Length: 208
Image: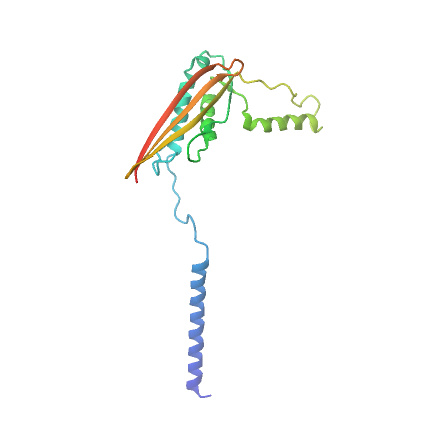
């Protein structure tokens, strides 16, 4: 083999190696998973008005919870100052979209507890955890005698908060209008009397 042939073989080999590397790089780029959220992260104001869409959002949740809390604290039952014991029932979602109604009632409960004007009994969602804890303390034999909390000592709520959230959606040729109405009432558990009720509505309009 003459020197010229050797040079040609080496050149072809180098070209093939370069092409293989290029194909591998292209293949990885096309089949690899895209990097999600690779840009810089910034923190915004949690209380800022959220207007990305006209679906139910964080601003609506905060507005409804704050309005209902103010109204409840001013109601005759709570204004008496005897810190009634209250529980919250599941709020019914009557809209056509998913809304975490528990987040609304959680916010109302947290704000009312901060006011110091009421006490809250565990709701039906948390009752299983309460029951499990009492059983664990009394039936497992793991606790010192006299330190386990007695079964039968839970307090019954004086009042129950319940309600629903509904919506009306209207679509025009260029406009989408969504009307939300959040209704709550405070019910005397023993008598069934509705002691307080209020509504908060929100209208949101956007171009289509």
